[in-house]
Length: 432
Image (spheres, one colour):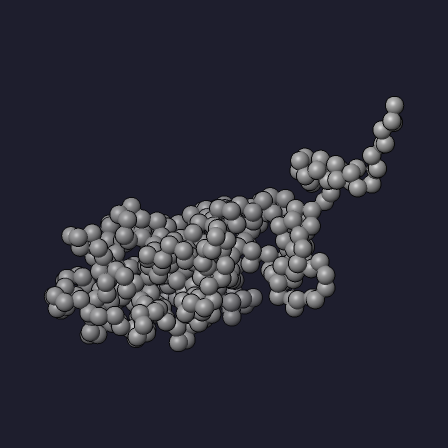
């Protein structure tokens, strides 16, 4: 019986009231998936098996892509903003501001929570957190739920319910749609994200096979497979004994450099087609790394694959990552949080500030401030505030400045006319 059917049989018709669950990170068994030539994959619903997840994370390219995405999303400041007369201002008087910006729950900071949610979304295709409320109905915490323990069902009235089971034998809990923050990966049914590990199962398995091959190759003293030949007929039992003796004596790095003594008429010949050059192992490994990075929309140089990188195209790739791949993840988080936490609050919105990407680049940050200062967008006091510097009590710090040649035509004409009127006396008229 599927997990969803077991939960439906165990749950009462009444929906369980809001409750912060005990965090659980156990992985449930795999569900019935789609049979392919490379095994069973799970595009939706209950998650892939623990073995698939472990194999995916053991591939360095996939692990690096998940780290780049999750840590990039987590490092940017996230705040609750209020729109006042067309201007976005921090709403730090709201309890939710500090939940999102600093302490999401009892044991996770905002950075930790977003990193986990992005990781779950990259691996499992879905990330879930349940809200905890105080007596006034304010959200005071967001508790993450492991995707393997959550089953989502679309009801006939087009609302979602989330069935959560912490582990085998645990009491199941059903949450309403407005109890859950749900961040989805790509989806074609609208309410469940597809599982990236399943979508990339083929290329991940190929990369894993390359890793296993490389490990075996170096365990064998960096030598390819060999064949022991003899001109004399050898019984099967003697051949098996010779093979086991050879592997025990010369296989593995601990046996490297040992001297082999062969019986009369016995020779050892390497298999020529088994060399790494013939199989193009390095080129194939680079290709698999590029395919994983392409599927995750991460630039190659950010995960250490720089075989085709130069300074100019790496800089452009970083800009494309900021404007394309990372911006999509930021919008995914913002839209999910706005929908779940701020329903009916039209003047409030969650903002993840991409200016945090400039935090480690002082030169780009200075250039950004300089350009905004020169067109009158920022004052010196505002620039100091953005840099977390104390205010300076000097005249002109709160003023906005623009170059003289940036005046509008009408303003310049008015200024010129005022100067003529003030500085040049009118010519007296003659009496005649």
